[in-house]
Length: 197
Image (cartoon, rainbow, N blue to C red; front, side, top):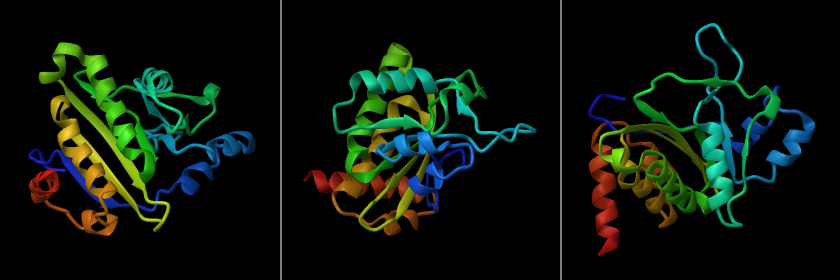
């Protein structure tokens, strides 16, 4: 991701089955996670620590989702509560947990994420930065699209939300995943504007 690039888009093999099948997921947790349509997924490790790590914001964001999501959003964290380890890399950036979401509930989730960003940052939203990886899985096709957002908190919905809306409107995950340069931000905005007309 270049400095100018707020959103990086790529295809991924990391599905719900991939995360639910990790060796640190017990059989009991695996059963619970299989009911979810939103999974908080860990960082793969950091420096010499090889276990799963989550950003410090994970628990608060999870509680926010539980209190504000409707019946359609079933969220869970991809690790046992007692094994949850946190990592804080940058105090100047609101680091949201990596999330894997089913396409059907992705628009609701993006709205909840935007609400959480506003709740968490308040009037500082104009000056703050957000970092998050959001992977969207289309259950019909089995395709997954990973978006990595790093940029102004106030622009999160404009970029990531536009991607989700385009997907809900029928754009193919493969088409969006092929966008590998800084021009995809402009294309996303243009497509989003065209659909509003």
